Image (cartoon, rainbow, N blue to C red; front, side):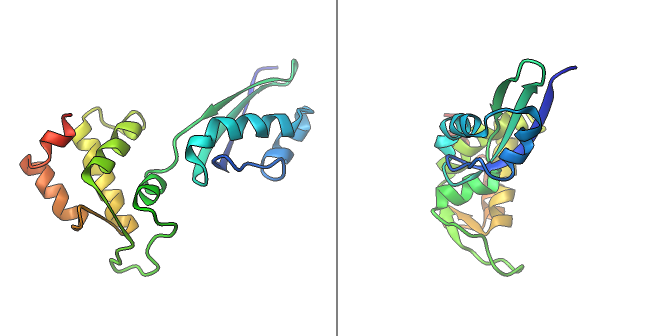
Length: 160
């Protein structure tokens, strides 16, 4: 029998042996407490954020490895803005603000999971998520900042 992958979304640094982890591991007779401790250690950097985790299990040997993904872009933006909730209305409601440096840092973290290899395109993608999440960039609508990126105004930060 080959390896089995269990994909879960956990709260960074705060996973518990209860659902969804415990029930997912019980058929394999693997100690969920040990797995949770390892997950919490690996996701501590993203404490409180939703983090995708994959547990690869060899059912015969009971060995496992944990692969930690990155939180969603919206969660990284909200953390950078210091907000815990997005807008409550569908019309643009601004709930926070981040710097362009924050946007570039998030783009650098997420670029490998984006369908682009260009940092500028990744930055524009993060700006789109910021707008959808209700987060301004440099106290401006991210749509306006996207135009500025196209004009090269932010190249000095993007190309650092």
